Length: 266
Image 1 (tube, one colour):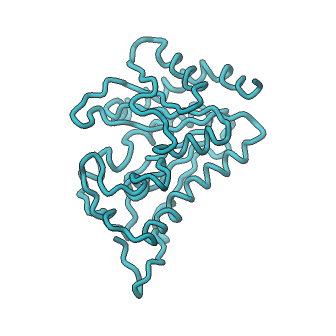
Image 2: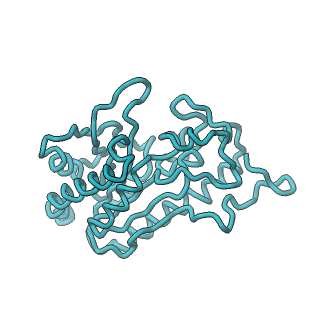
Image 3: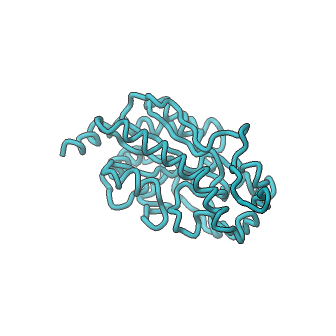
């Protein structure tokens, strides 16, 4: 828990010398894609210590999406796309969970207890929302508002662990969607065209309103064609793998971009 002066929980979560809760790359990118990375970092604010976890746990997938930020940064260059990245660990607050969801500030993840998240006061939760969640989504919202006069396609970049609960996950990459499958259908076709990789259709996770936030709110909520791209972590932990997948995604996007943009004239 975060300690407070004089028994009050009104302290700012982040010190003035700590990184911002949100990073923007290539804000004026001229491409049609807008990229976001909800789980880009495993950083924990200094005031929260390590949430009671050791370094190995904080380096693990429960704390972030390893490799996702690397792919997103490279893809931003390929597509000349603006990119918004979260600045802190999903264990502090998950930027892709509705605030009503129990995993918004998870007390356990993949069977691992998160001591620093147990028994939080409502004010402590509010501080995390205001310091990390709202700034991240505020930047995404303002960016999309600024592009309202031109068509934009929203891509949320994630990664997933190859093994979960003892089960192997065979997909090299997955394309996830909710009610709007338009962009996903094109991406699935482009990524699966070569037959070299196993591409998951709404795998390893579908988009659900009760579980996901970014695509339902910023994509479907605005009527923007949008997808969540999930890449298996063993494919992108090394720099060479991240570069290869960024190039593949850029190639796939280039194949479907013109057709996807026609959705706005339909």
